[in-house]
Image (cartoon, helix red, strand yellow):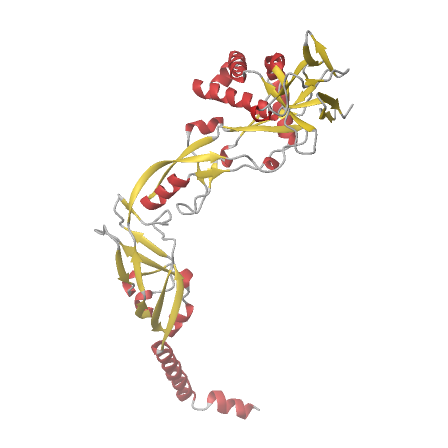
Length: 415
């Protein structure tokens, strides 16, 4: 055994060491002289020295383009095999460029993002398809943002009233064609009611009671006042409109408000039906529910309203009116009805003046005077649309109205 090891490691050891050194040198030179060709796709493209009044559609902050490019590179096998798209960047110098142009990517356009890769030594040749750079005029515009009706369900115990303001503006800067398209179409921002907890509204409502406020206003957090515009930025863009500080979702408690007033009921005859239904002969039939008082048909049963505030009811209760449409469908004598408010524009002004007079200094600072008035008008109109009548807690006012001969019978079917 010793003689074998002696022959391998001891005998002629100088020659053996020399042979090993020559072999290593030969392997190193051969390995580094081998060249290969490889296609690298999806290499990010970045531009520099872009004129101040120019931009590129889809260009991201920092000069990165939204589209990548592919190149075929030839060079040292060791280096080429290590390179991938994440290691490279295509750099285009746009100095003195004011119009669209097409170029081929050369070795000088490639930048290594990996310190261990020396492109100058490792790459011998670069082949690429043409890369077209489209320059556009850089413009700045205010774009309308419509705040749409939110999705989702309101927290338990609350009813969604409305969003305010309906529209904001966002100032955007970008390629002329993109900005024009955004301005023509506008932008939309939609909130989700399920992102608001019952506890959050309960806290606001508790504070409201101390201030005798009836609307629960959830002011939108700053982090929500952002909108995605992929053509301009990979990140949500903040709406900087000064009016955005007033952006809120308004709720009303699902409380029932006593109306505490009799409600008149009348018949309406469309002009096209007068030949068939004579307004002089068709009358309302009086019952315990619908009584004639001073020759006027009235519902005296105490009713309740939901989806509104006490202030609203106090303003409109003497002007509430139920109208029955005398226009039965063929072979069906059932009639439809609706609750109306007489001369609502006058009541709206009264409601707005009342609410503005009750504002605190802190509330007045939330919005400009014209915005405060517009906001209260919107609240009034929302109440008009949301108001629902109840005959008792848990039972909506549901009238069955039929035309029998020349009598219109009104029966509350939930008594």
